[in-house]
Length: 324
Ligand code: SAH
Ligand code: AVI
Image (spheres, rainbow, N blue to C red):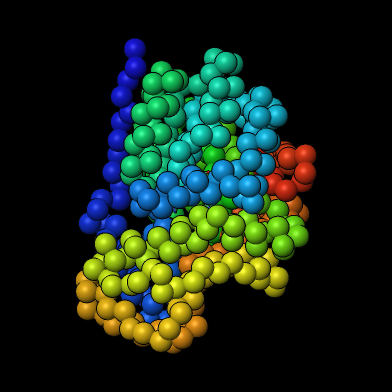
C-alpha cells in the first residue's frame, strides 16, 4: 500500500518573505553587493538547475552519479543505514541509486527529504513514496536552521549531495558541519558530495555554459525579487559572469549591470543605485582538496571513514561519522 508523503512546513511563505527581505536589504545596501544563493530556487530556478545538471559542461552531477553507481553497495554496507535524510534534496534523482541498494538489502524503512523549494520537493517525495512504498516525510525547510527539528531514530544516512556545501563560505560551512554533527545520532553517517579543485577553464565553462542555461539561472534571482518583493529589475540589463577566484578556490557567479541605473524594491521601500559595470555576487561554489576537507570535518568532530572519487577524479563522496 502506498502511503502519501507527510509534509512538514518549517518555512512558511511568510517566513520566506521575511528572510528574503532581510537578506536583500543587507546584500544590496552593502558596499560590495551580494545575494545569498538560496533565493535562486523558486519553481523556475529549480527547473533551470535541473537543466544545468544535464549540460555537457556541468560534469558535477554525472561524476557524482558515477560514484553512486559504483559504490552504493559500499555506502549502504558501511553505514548499515535503515533511513535516509537528504538535505537540499532537489529532484532526488541520483539518490535513487542509494535507495535502490538500501531497498534491495531489505534495510530501507524511511526517507526524509528537506528542501526550501516546495514544488520540487513535493514532486520528489510523492514519486519516492510511490516507488519505494516506505514512510516518506517531506520537510519544507532551511538546512541552515531546521535540522534540530528533524527527529532521529534508527540508523540514518544524512546525504548532502551535489557539492551544495560549496555554496557556503568557510565560516558558514563550519557552522553547517557542526549542525550536522549535533543532529546525528551515534550510529548515523553523513554522506557528503564535494566538487574537487581542477583546471580553472573547465570550472569556468561549467558555470558559463554555451547554451546560456546558467546565465538564465543566475538572472532568475532578479525575477524572483521582482515577483516576491515588487522590485523592478530588468534581468536583461545584467550580464552573467563566472569567475575563478584562485585565492579562495571558488567560482564566483556574478551579475554585472550593463548601465548606470536605479532599481526600486517596493516591498522594502528601497532604491538601489547601480554604477555601469557594478556587480552583484550571487553565488560562490567552492572546490575542495581531499585533505583540507578531512581536516574541516575532523575539526567539528566528524571522522571521514571512507572517500570515493569518480574515475576522472573530478568529484568526491565522503562517508563520515561522529568521531569516537
Ligand atoms: N541535491 C541535489 C540538488 C542540488 S541544488 C543535487 O545534488 O542535484 C541545491 C538544492 O538545495 C536545491 O534544491 C535548493 O532548493 C536547495 N537549497 C538551497 N539552499 C537551501 C537551504 N538553505 N535550505 C534548504 N534547501 C536549500
Ligand atoms: C547547487 N550547487 C552545488 C550548484 C553549484 O554547482 O554550485 C549550483 C549551480 N550554480 C550554477 N550552476 C549550478
